[in-house]
Image (cartoon, one colour):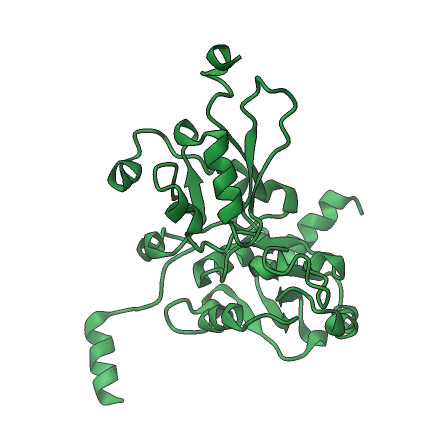
Length: 125
Length: 164
């Protein structure tokens, strides 16, 4: 107890200042992935959707063949397991986001554009 | 009273002191561990005016974890009904948001199948920092940020270059 008291006095306050100030340790937290649209082909996105154990990733139904389509990422379902990053490390990285609370369920569902939607459309069509 | 006035009143009343009842609807208890850490010295939830209470009748906010197993539905509804209004329901963790057991026959899969959820906190488990942010969003002290996050990385992101 005495030792703890002396150590506590020497180190100062241990409590985070979080809501008022940014928290330094937040970058070490496991977080949901971020995707790199330039490396995300439809084939890669299909593999990612197959590797996701919690159904957070799925391919959007593409209306036209010329359209590159999109990968739907449900942040709410993501368990930050890292299997997508292991499946395609060139297309997936960590987002580093942790302030993910939402007042509406639908804002947690993100549409990730696939490669070929904007830049390669003319070439593939 | 218009909805805006009601929202302002709730934010004023809940913005200072708020009592939390946690409800485990079949979670693996890791969310509970993170919730318990909120009261530890590093996060010190009480400095922000949040307190845990064992009684739903004293609670303003219901922190629900787990995928809402069907056997728990009656207890969940009773807990919600016992809370005095105005009340907030916060769903915590990927289970509560429908990620882990969406098709399990013994669960509803999501908390909002039974209770009206106001704030969703993703994560498996959400870290105490994420829970603090979620509680701040629930009482209107912090702004929600996930709406503007694209979850896409730029091509010249150094973390991606390192992974190559």
